[in-house]
Image 1 (tube, rainbow, N blue to C red):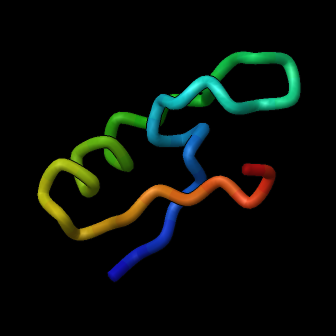
Image 2: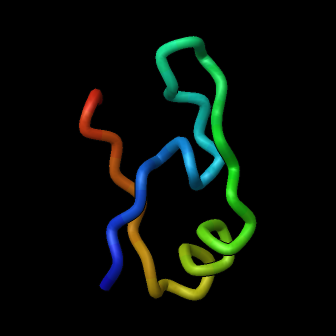
Length: 41
């Protein structure tokens, strides 16, 4: 299992309310090969 930052998964949790979506990360999450995590939450 891979843990990735929530902002890379498209969640708007960055310090300025935006995200840093990376399509490969989103694909890994949809295939249940990765889990998103936001340490700030």
